[in-house]
Image 1 (cartoon, one colour):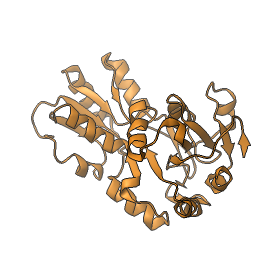
Image 2 (cartoon, one colour):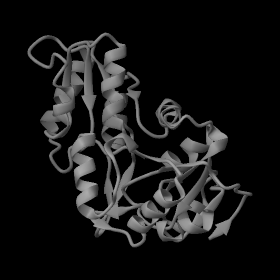
Image 3 (cartoon, one colour):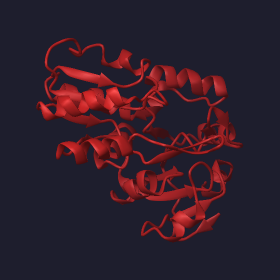
Image 4 (tube, one colour):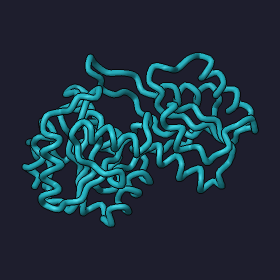
Length: 260
């Protein structure tokens, strides 16, 4: 591990998921042992993820099947943040452009034929079409707000980097002249939700992630110490030209024991 700034022993951890614990559904070495070590030392944690392809319940089952002993209440997702936001807005009618799995979490909202006030956009894998984007464009031009569950640029898969929905969100902003409401990381409110859930202050926790902007920069904007892992979307050249400087860098989640 390379320590760039002083790191005191944390009372709790925040972890990114994709690129830290697994890539394309395949575990990164050391993940289950890291969770077991935290359990042994009674150190609480939250998974904070922009993944919006599944509900928290479905994601918990997936992680457990992979060998990661994580509970549903230990996961904070951007999909969950969207539900919370819509409730705060009075549960307005909306149009969903999200995965079929995640729609289960949005069943309480009117997503029928009524004119939508919000378009909810999340991960849809390779299912995007021009018609999808043009439909959202027309709804936005007709007055709907775009609620982007996150604005990620790209993510790591088994054979390289894949484009994320941030490019689509930005394109729609450009075409309509309207700014999207963006949730998930690096949004400060998203991190505060996890901190409140833990009952911790920013000084109490350390964020571990593979994304300089969403994980490291987002956490540091609240004064949370952050550790960048060299797995997932990590690229040395991106780190060298970035203004964001992690507090420490480690090869992978397998080195978590050094922080403890």
